[in-house]
Image (cartoon, rainbow, N blue to C red; front, side, top):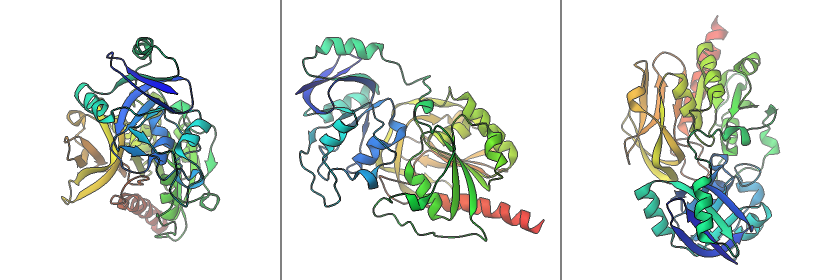
Length: 383
């Protein structure tokens, strides 16, 4: 079946349909990862976005639905590829990418020049687009793209957060292949973490559990008092989709957590929410950072980390207060990749130390969060 991807600037690409049939709109972005397409598809941070893979062939190892998903189902608004593999050449595969997309209602397109599309998005910036399958008028799709909601000002967190609090049980999970699950360290007792689900990836919970934490997950809208009532050793703010600016409830809760002196750690959208709560501002990047090989410099020691990234907004360096220091910088464009309060136990990073997909260079950041919690536990034990 034929398919068309149309952009709001009037550009359109003709290809073939992959996955579900129909029409769907979203912000068109690109990801430079060579592997990990299933993790990308199921990452809640991609809600509202049509993801273009720059790697030319996608789907060759199929999908392993139980093991490799970062949430219960794909979250993307659409999927764009140069060449989709019709077979799954991996012993772990439970099916093909095409069947997986179709089963979960994801409209995709293949057979287009993704290199040209990526160059356009890098030059003009990400833009709204529509994928349509079948006998579709490209100009009608362009008009639909122009009327689609913009990412700026959109609260997409409410569409992906959990409905009610729950306890994460590592024994009920199917671990991702290649990432050790055994505990790396235990305090005198398991550390209790209360986690805000702004669109959390499953491997974040796996890494917290691997470091010896008991985690209770809360909806993004839960008041901070609910989390503090469980007397946690630390509070975590997760990744998630969309613009952080309209998340007034999340920022308000983050301020209450900061005032409580309970150690707090945030990743991606959680980093932006904590940044806003600390007094900084955020802005939209031209085309964002999405991939599994982005270099980041640790300001304290000068070491370079190769990181997994997925974000379209960043913290404005001119707005960072004097009592907050920048801990990490992106080597592509100099944007902020990490923050730490100089007096309070609050830290956050823009990138993804939990990987999935991507390298494990930054897993030490979980150890830093554990250190902050153990110091607090030690203080209370001596008191």
